[in-house]
Length: 85
Image 1 (cartoon, rainbow, N blue to C red):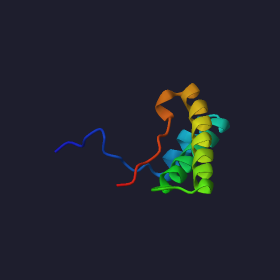
Image 2: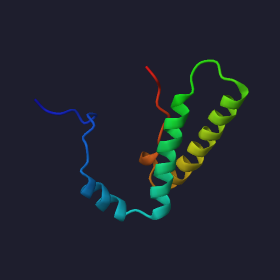
Image 3: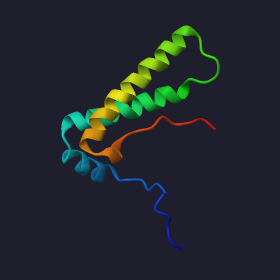
């Protein structure tokens, strides 16, 4: 049985550190910002009050800024907000 190319495989910490050491610091920071913003956006559900809408919009703006930096470096690095099931 062969593994599908879509199956996520965990990366050991040493390998992740080696990959990270080859990337510019501002790209690594943008990746962290994008992941955090995507996680925050996914937390908002249902009818939102004005404050929650503002927080969600702020998180979406942060995600967009980080994705702009990531896409300029490599379009495959962009992050999409996760959907709840």
